[in-house]
Image (spheres, helix red, strand yellow):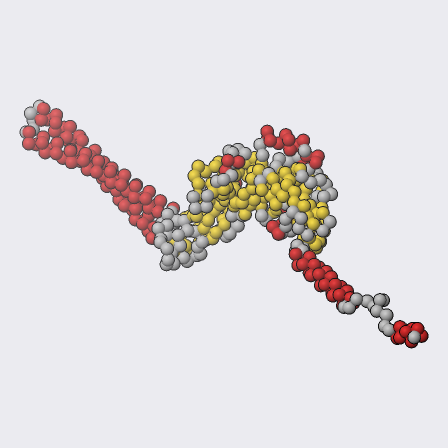
Length: 416
């Protein structure tokens, strides 16, 4: 019995070491969930990662002593070179151009002949006036002779009348002849005056056929050609010119700028400024404020400012575009001079300028740091930065409007 029981017990299945039902599947499910979560987290991270902006890199360099010691610009404005003395020269009369003596770019002196008009009719009128004057002078001579003859006759008749040798009637006739001769002499003299005035008028008309320069200058526009009609009173349209050409006095050139009325308080008469021509960005012309025109343009909210140039140069031409920098006063210059040794120069596209202050973006590994800086003058080397950055600092350059503090960047190129 014991032996059977022992054999039966050997045939039983021992379930004590059998693992719990479904345990392996649970492990695989946990691993799958972790993988999915990791993938989702990575996708969310890369999806929310800030956009990388490509920028150029410029390095701030120590500003030269002669540049860093210059006064800073407190206001920049755009304007144009204009002549204060300019004239569109025309004839005083209507006529046909028979000779034109000017070309664009030609320098002319005061009263130099620019053109001549057809003077045929005016010469004929002048000759007629001279003939009439000659006739009037001949009449004056005849009247003078008649008067000279009437004087002794009248004196003799008056003496005879006083002695009662002749009658009153005879004396009255002699007096009438004398008065007529004297009146004829006066009329003849006035006729000569009229004739001389007529000759003067004809001479003036004849002289007006010659067009002369009103002042010394350079011809900038040639408006007429030989054979064309010119008239100072012709209206628009038609084929009649209103002028011969335009002359500009190059010594009267100055700059005119429109300053926003929000910043006009920074501009003062006789204030020192620098003028930079768009055509010559490396040439800084010393200048000063001549006057602030006491009226504002309400459509553009600007005030016009006249600026006088301190140098005369043939490169300065009318209507050239310029950039005017209004400099700080001498009283404000001392602190800037003390900080001159710390000033640096950076490219213009590496700073967002706003008057005497600005913003730069300093490179920090693959991000940028926004930093406020104090600005000096703009020079041919670039923008002078008085404080905020030091020499050797790497800055973002280019379109800075896309940047903000902490933005990731990618370097496209690096310059000085």
